[in-house]
Image (tube, one colour):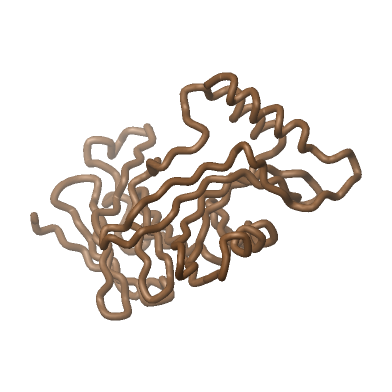
Length: 239
């Protein structure tokens, strides 16, 4: 495994453009990883991991891309995370305990493909993130060419450039105490937990169950078809 990481680090170093030279975005082929998966409703899809060498603000960046693709119909979406040359080389060469890419998701989430649109929900504490995309491509090659030019649209960190990422914050509606255990009320230590209990489509809207830090606190969050917040309802009754 260590030899594999060293090889990837070497690929990154050799892919660095000469100073002052602008290079066309390209993927590191030895970093490609794909596996077959299926949604809860049985829909088959492919889960891809790739590393894109691109430029941002005049600097070379190494973009880790995780993409979801449905063969045949062509629906496609991705999450991207940009690293500097050194950060990517260090991460790939120094972490021998982690596979180059895994089909196992590293976080708790709910993934849907409905009406031609991918929607991927996850939440930590008061923050809900929805990665969504209704793009469809005739070929996988076309999809990857599009990502090479538009990778910030799926930026994992969100922000103004993230076209396909919706962020919903719930502190205002539910209060800080909802997301912090009573035992830590006067404790400065950070507390982070996975707050998303379930997701389902209700008509054209999305209904999310959010778990509070303490039992029996719960809340129901309603989003519209564009993932905009419609309503938040507290529910302290036990299930």
